[in-house]
Length: 134
Image 1: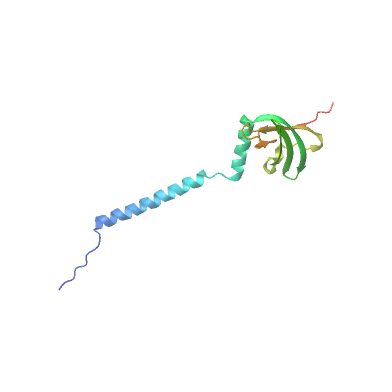
Image 2: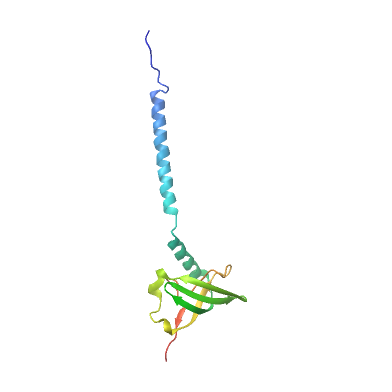
């Protein structure tokens, strides 16, 4: 009696399954790379927020309360409400005035729909006005 070993799949089916497996792996890799590229870092998200406020934000007057290390603390009024806010300026040090003692009043840019979303300094705009000596 001869025993014949029957393969569960024909060679054509085996090649088809192998190609399908390679295709699934390639699609997964392409999807993973696209997902990685689409992720936005917190620094980039903050830069985009500042640029958006510079472009469409309303401008108002603010009171500079304190500048400490990488933080600016300020307060401002919008429609009868007082807002106290701070802004991290660690990435904006090059845009800061060298002499902070000459700071006069400060301008603020805020989102009209969410006035708590505000800035006093950005890459393309500064609300830090220095006094001019005559």
